[in-house]
Amino acid sequence: MENDNVYNHIAEKIPEMSKSHKKIANFILHNTNVVPFFNVATLAKKAGVSEATVVRFASFLGYSGYPELQSRMQSSIQKQLTTAERLKMTTDVYNDQDRWIYDIFYDDMENIKSTMEKLDIEKFYQAVDLLQDTNKIYIAANRSAAALGIFLQYYLNIILGNAEMVRSIENLSEQLYNLNEKDVVIGISFPRYTNSTIQTLAFAKERGSKTICITDSLLSPLIRHADVVLTATSQMPTFIDSFTAPLSLINALVVSVGKERMKEAESRLEKIEAAWDRFGVFHKGSQEER
Image (cartoon, rainbow, N blue to C red; front, side, top):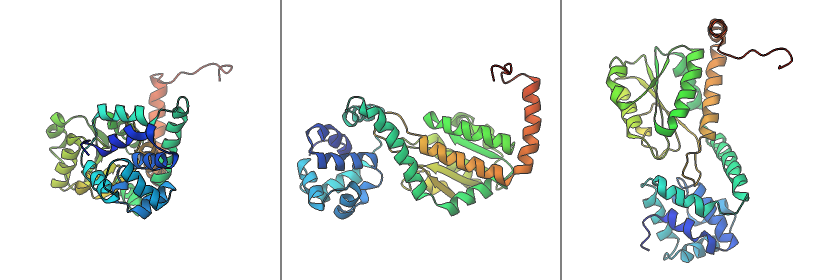
């Protein structure tokens, strides 16, 4: 096989596949981080087909057998797909006219379900405890993941008043020069992982700060720099990142911190509400409008 990326090869072959082979292909493309470590029996069970069908699937793709397919998947997982490659995969996978729109909703629901099933509740509460007992919280989240970081920073700041975004690697030294063991740094990154987020988390670890990472799997390069690891499934064969499940995880984290710091949060919110009213932040319509 000359195709550089097995996942692209699978996606391209979907139109020629039988119904059972499409089931395997779709399962693989939606679970690229874990399938390379499945044996034939596990993949067959997860995809809802027979073991013989999995073997035939590998042959259909042009491989000598499942071991070669598995080896190619394990190799490909080390290479992050470019945006152009993901765009091509989108066209190949979501090709069922209007049905593909509903498939995206379904895939997001599956991501949330997978995140719930894999949630390490002990690690989750460790993160909650760290966020409550800290001097300063710094959040490193770049490119598309910046949306998650801004959301998390906004609500942690309302509850705790000590959260700050690390805006860029260029400003890292000015923002983090005084980092110490009393601070917490949160790194948020999903494939394709950003080096600036990894470097920020590594720097925090070197300075003795507690570190939390929110990422997609235990294969993430952020893991080795994190004291507490929280994972959320973001698998979707598209050119955009699926942040539905990561956002749900962040929602749970913020709510848990708020519950633990209820009295302080209420006092802070009362003052913030007064400031919002003073500056007319929110529209206040007439009774009829309400």
